[in-house]
Each structure stands twice: as C-alpha cells, then as structure tokens.
Length: 413
Ligand code: ATP
Ligand code: MG
Image (cartoon, rainbow, N blue to C red; front, side, top):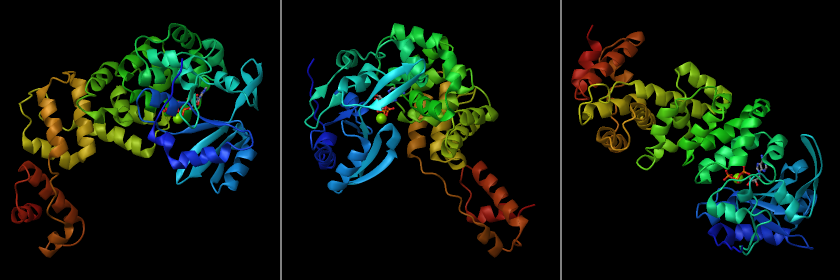
C-alpha cells in the first residue's frame, strides 16, 4: 500500500531545517508515530517525533553545525530534543532489540527501520514519513489504520510482558482511534496479563488514563476494561460507569465533557475522599484535583435540576451557580448532574441551562470591606461577618438588592 501525507507541520521551515541538519553524511530521518497516524486520519498532529539513523552524540553535533539548539532529554535512550524556530522536535535514534531475556530486552542503536518499527506497540503507531511526505509502513499499519484496528505488533502476550503499560495503551488508542470491537487476540492477552499492571508507576498509568477518559470512544472502552477486570485496578474505584457513559453521550453538545478532570470526577462514584484517592492514585496535578472537586461540589449546589424540575431553570438560579462556583465549575457541575440524571442530550432543561451558563454574566458583588468600614463598621471580624450577611441577602434577593440595601443588611444584627 502506498501513501503520502501533506500537512502544514511537515512543510514548516522549522521542521525542514531539522531534516537539513540530520540528513547529512548518509544519515536519514523520518517522522514517526502519532504525527503520521493522525495526519493520515485527518486529525491534528500533536507532537512531532523524529527517528534517525544518527546516534545521539552525532545528532547533537549535526544540530550544532546548523545552529539548532539541542537538549539531551533522554540521551541514554537515544533521544535528543532539537529546538527549531521555537518548536521542539524529539529526535530518537533507531533502536533494535539485541536479545530478549524473559522480560528485559537489551537494546542498542541501529540503522534498520524494520527493527525500529518492530519495537513499537501497535501497527498504526509504526508508520514513518520522510521529509517529502512519503509514508513507510514496515509492519502493515496502513490497512489497520484504515480499518481503525488497534493491533499489537507481533505476539500480544510477548509485547505486553515487555511493558505492561501497553495494556492501557491498547485501550487508550482504541478509545481514541479505534472502530468496531477491540482486537480479539489483544483483548484476550490483556486479560491474562492484567496482574502486571500492579508494577507500573502511578505517573505512567495517570498519563494514559487521562487521555483515555477524554477520548471519543471512552464510554465503550471503559466498559470493556471493566469486563476485563481492569478499571478497579487502575482507577481506585469501581467506577460510576453509567453516569460516565451518560456524560460521554453529551459530547456533541458539550465539548466540556472532554476535560479529563470532569470525566474522572463522574467516573468516581464516591465522595470527596474518593476523589482524593483517585487524584493520588493517578498523580493528577493540583489543578486537575481542584477541578474534579469543584465539579463535584458544584453538582451538589441545588439548582432547578433537582427532583422538582421546573422548566426552564430560573435565571437567578443560573446566576447563583455561576456566582458561587465560577463559570468552569458551574458548567462542569451541571454536566456532572446531567450525567447522573441520565436524561440524555434530548433533555431541554439541561441543554438550555448549558447555553445560559456559557453566556450569562457572572454577578459581581458590589460591596467590599472598605465600604463597610467607611459606613461605620469597626475594622475586624465584624467586617467579614457583615459581608457574609450582605452576600447571603444579595443572593436570596436574586442579586437585586442595591448598595444601600446591602449596607443595611451588613449592619443588621
Ligand atoms: P499521542 O498523540 O497520544 O502522543 P503517540 O502515538 O505520539 O500518540 P506517544 O505515547 O507519544 O504516542 O508515543 C510515540 C510513539 O512511540 C508511539 O506512536 C509508539 O510508536 C512508540 N511508543 C510509545 N510508548 C510505547 C510503548 N510503551 N511501547 C512501545 N512503543 C511505544
Ligand atoms: Mg506523541
């Protein structure tokens, strides 16, 4: 099968300068992996990885000769990051397995594209493109890509035993790019070898799971993972599977559902402590942890989507939620509530609330502590108490009370 790609990122002078630097004295370089795969699928390329016949020290020399910045980001594994016109490109020397002793392989640098391809995980991830866009396919990735079939290169059991993270990558790439059922041989192998997940670092699991839960086919994929007995091993929860599926069913309406923190909050079926456990378990960032908890807390703020379901949700309720939670958490919280209600994308009450949560102005509380002091409230704890009272009255009034009335509320006993 023959294929050629064209893309702005490939024509970019910054990348062509990297090729100019590397392809001297008989060395060759090709873009590999995600960038080639995604471009063939018509999707944006995220990061651009390059493979080359040149060894790392030589890559650094070649870069220096052309005035490109070179950072030895993973020198021993063969990776040097070249920065060209401000864009980083990871350049990795071709590798091959010399011997495989049970689970650990001795790796050396090589000059053989076939061997380099065979060390990769899935056929669709082992596609290469030269600087002109000509695609090279050493392990039959093109037909699999066309069928959107995520297939291990070689014997799935052997490949998983080399690196158990490939269990999660199998599901993750299926969720992102797959169609139809999971590859049967791969699925049987991940079930047999799932105990190996216990030896993986939390960081590596977290990186894969974040991407997985945000992927287009996450709902079916997480279900398959549960059938395989894998969800509870990697998420520290048995999973709110149904709400998670409901959330992903809202994708087309609400791209906000793609945020990993929201997806994980919905997947966790427990309370605040469970969210913390999950965040610890996946080594989520503080911002992600905060977003999970904020989504959860905002979903508990009583709004019109409770049992009574008046339609539409009153404007003051929308503004109240925005004021209390902020826009991001308000929308997350509403989507969380929608996912748990399970009423689906046809539910106009939620759909209408979503539009208004996106567009409504967030009320700004018009009083400050200074205002209270100027109005005669003694500096100290009384100021905070007064502000709180005024704010509660303001919210209760549907944000209608003016400054006069708010000052009076602040000073009232
Ligand atoms: P993404 O768009 O998510 O970055 P990607 O294909 O670039 O997708 P990476 O995790 O960045 O995925 O890895 C880059 C390439 O390196 C993969 O396409 C694959 O060829 C190879 N690779 C990465 N991790 C592994 C692994 N654990 N085992 C085998 N090959 C791997
Ligand atoms: Mg990548």
